[in-house]
Image 1 (tube, rainbow, N blue to C red):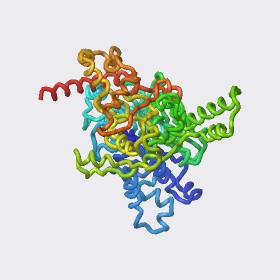
Image 2: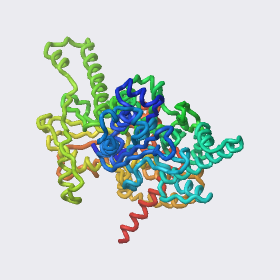
Image 3: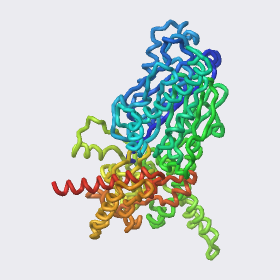
Image 4: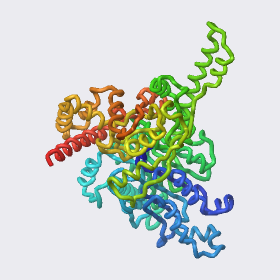
Length: 630
């Protein structure tokens, strides 16, 4: 219904054989480049702001380029970066383009190691200079480092203080730049340690270079840096000498999957992407563990290694509800369970009147939950029929039997995404008027003034689209009652681990709770929570408490939902409106292996998250005070 700003996505491809092998077997030495393109395009939902790729060519001669990068901005960035890569081959003779030996010796991006990134900013910082991969250059191949990731660190000030304390001077105050410098510094030290060891063995010249590249171990680099990182992340890196790594956070907040055979190792943010691109079975793909890293050395030998001790499993439930592809075998079933679990609350909302209720969904990510809801309703209806027929207290007449057999769940395609607002459309009232027409309805899909209308969505975060478009346009069908169903619980708290939801006043649940506090003369709750949050700003991380929870504590979920209805229902709507949310219990029952629920519960997996949610509430309160004074 409303578009959440997506998190980032990563993709890596490491060829384990020479380019000529792929040319002979698959018809092109571009096998790795083409696989990277597919891995990125299949994850396009994760990159709305830009994309980039990096490539390393192994065993290049001195004086020849061996590390390449291409980046672009915009929704068409994937197409643009690969078009730019292929532009290097445009004027080649066919015999040159189809010669893997010529490509290896002469062509850019004709390498064995590829890394791709899809970006959506979660920090507000934008522009080409913020598009991954980031690149740190050096005259030593092993000291060159390209870095990308799907992450947001919550303790950037601490990391910045640590690296400046030893004399480093990052060029920009942004987490990726800071990580690049931190990891790059440790990489320098690792290479220098090996240099001294090789020199002590009597090695000289390029023999030292080759020995360093054969012995370098990136786990030494990560172990010196990663324990100090607070946040959710999958961080990937490649060196100019052909080493690569992918590291997942110790809470398992952000996802990563990989596949390996004797020809290739690939990694991506989503499992079905690898299944489709590599044409492999789900059981062939492994998930990177909490705090675990995947390493591939220059020789093409791969291994996994525990870098940070795993913490409690806090794998993100929002990944399952919204961000990841619904084609994943587990996610598909989980989303169906989310819809099915809502059936009792939905039946209550329509007073169990299935004969006069039409069910639909808002395209497209809620469709699977809709199927689950439909199955749950059919199960309920079948039980109703069975009980009615089994009742021996009276003899069924033909008319009654016909009535029983004709009972069904009335499913219709009611709402249609009709237009997409363009950025050139003016802000303010004119934009709001146009926003009301983003969706259209199927006229005649229900009986006016008789039927209820139930619409399921995957999440209701800000409620903007509900207020500006959905509720008003659904009311044109003249339903007796509109029930908006969310397959996720009430989103009450910001995310600080890679999804762009950072301000308290973005959430309709928070606005509803504040409105209730003001209505009931309980504004002291806001003041006390602010004072407590302010008082612990300088407190040690282990003492931090999420004081924003106090804002919701006086109210039931139902009270907050009813207030949301008041805030979101436009003037002139004739139908009764109700919002039904998933419960936390229903969420965990549906997604048992992904218990990370801080968006809904406020139980952040890291102390950095707690510090930032209190900071967001302080900012909200101080902004409110400023606006009141003005």
